Length: 350
Ligand code: NAD
Image: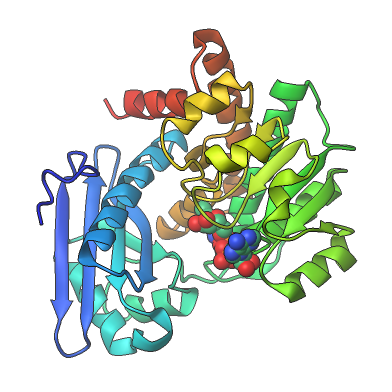
């Protein structure tokens, strides 16, 4: 299998394949670009069916981190790592330590953080053998709540600001009062986003596969609950994908009535061309890696030892301005917002 001719290969600076026989570790670490600073990005622990799937994911995700950090104006580059295996059965301290030694070998060019399949305790465990990991510190957020490294509250707040920016640009509304937002996925980010939206006067329609979280949302947030299949057909002003990738695709676009798509999920569009379809249909799309950058902003301040809740809050709030710039430029140049975001990110990397 060739990496250099892989369709997702995009001038990545460094790719390491790390193996540890004793613990069974099989990991791939990808540093996409360190032009703006050391590469930072999560460690995904997932039972990939083939090595090819893992390579594709790490190449794609590490490039995405370069763009995300550039758009968030962070002095960081883009990187990502994947551990091949089932996090429920294969994760052991020995394996995480072996992974940490793999990070040491990169000497700080890549800093790992939490991602799907890994957790704050895992980051603490990796930290036992390396400095090149973050997302494990205890800290206090802007509301004065004690928190571990979990970046979800910052991600949710960034999405909330992003939805407000979209409502202002697309609907000329300063407030979310009376708007209906459909949230797909009420996990760490989606549920918090729901709370913020209700606080801002919005009404929620929600879907999740987890029944208990749906009951909570009905009770606490007054949300209307629909099935995971029916969420696409609901009358709503904003569709907020906060679960899976690729849920904006030709099939769902035939059904979605929302004029705004703005949520936390990574890789929301099934492929780049879908951005053009959204543009032609006059749907205001908040590019995923711009609106969901709250988490990486939070992690950056933690990792750099400058965690001040107010500073983080203000930086995350900047997502509103960045998105407004993207929406306006997209309108001026008559181009998809996804294309404009990529263009601005690349301009910042020159
Ligand atoms: P999470 O795992 O806590 O939540 C995901 C939720 O989606 C869960 O409640 C799950 O039950 C639900 N779900 C699964 N399948 C579903 C389906 N078919 N329909 C509806 N709901 C479904 O994850 P999270 O941390 O909240 O992240 C959500 C998304 O945002 C992910 O795509 C993640 O990559 C992205 N993201 C998260 C952060 C962060 O700070 N956590 C940062 C950037 C991007």
